[in-house]
Length: 213
Image (cartoon, rainbow, N blue to C red; front, side):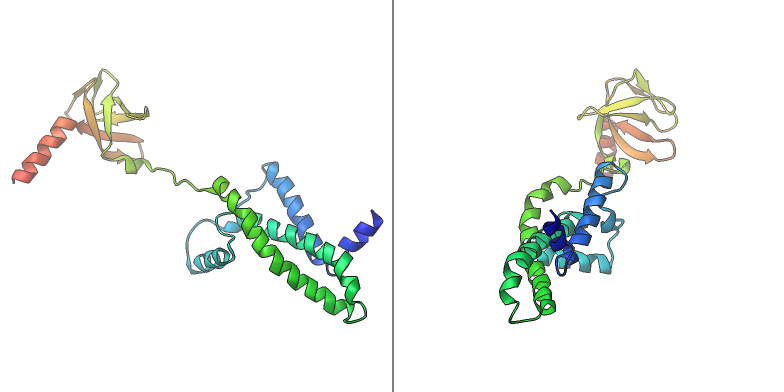
């Protein structure tokens, strides 16, 4: 155990040991729910720097997973290679080059080997980090619904979509729609969280009149 610790905290392995220890602590905290694993990926707003970073990761084959995952994989593979190289390869060059030179070569070689291995390992993980964009309520304008209450007025009413979602709906002032009728969501009032509806037949009729005109 003492020999193992002396290796991992010696040059050049320590270049990977310390960051790997930090990432292990990060993942423990993340599993506890105290930090978001996508904390290094920014707010999601696209600007020139974000696109450049994304292109760089894509060129390395590390796109599709959070940056914390990519870094962790690189550090893990780099650590393993650096440890094995320090223990089994470095002694072979003791009489040829200095310890510093061999250590720097190991660090560079570790990154060169770790990046493609991390890219290969990240591919099966991408399916767990697919971002599904939430549907905005305003995007439902034009959806066909069935009135589920006895009637819909300008102050009361509900309707159900084909997928079973129930929404609060209202008519335009002075109108009334009977229960069971098919209606179409034509407007959304964000402040009241309600949809303005009209019957399918009335909507189709108004479209026909517009086409004739």
